[in-house]
Amino acid sequence: DDHTIPIQQDPGLNVEKSSTTQLITHAGQPVVYTFDVTNTGNISLTGVTVSDPKCDAGSLTGPTGDTNNDGKLGLLETWTFTCTHTVTQAELDAATGPNPQLHNVVTADSNETGPDTDPLDIPIQYNPGLNVVKSSTTALITAAGQQVDYQFTVTNSGNVTLTNVTVSDAKCDATPVLQPGGDANNDGKMQVTETWVFTCTHTVTQAEMNAGGMLHNVATADSTETPPDTDDLDIPIEQRPALT
Image (tube, rainbow, N blue to C red; front, side, top):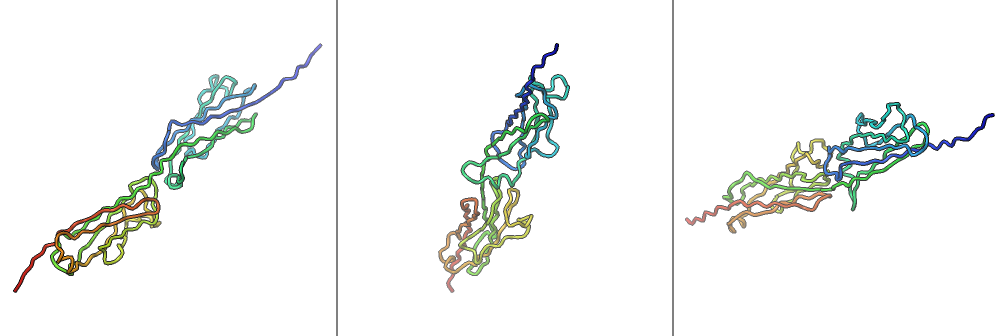
């Protein structure tokens, strides 16, 4: 005599994503992700896979945790996968708003189950910055009509790309001109690795000579992403009164 008792197969899969990285601060930063996969059902699982669009190509490793080395995820096993993501400049540039995050989702799957997902958000430090330094090869003002050259060196002191970078100076005879070579990729944007140099010329006036003291003025650099930054420069004026 035989007797049949139904077996209830109830496959289940769960994935949890984590990272030791707590804050994204710069492009090129490596972020290590860990994916823990557990069997939440009542049968062993085969063909277990993990995928994540943020994993750098070829960086996914694992699993560890296959204690009996049978290639199946047993009920008492936790399989761990890891991968690395290299933060891109585009991710930092896009991180505007009150609470920017590096967001992505891991997916685990098996032959016996449907896919399971888990998201993770890591805060991004959005930190635009701009710095201008003003200089001149002219060390002394001696006469009205003298041409004074000014140079404005502008650097990106933050961690995001800057747009609409401008320089202004009330003493310039004309709008400062960007010199070739600074915008290395000619995209009109100041990358964090770029230094832009602007130049202009000022023609000394008789009123400035009569006032004496210092030829004083202030350069202002600005961009869409930053508040303005300023730098001043003083060049001595030499007065030589003479009567014949």
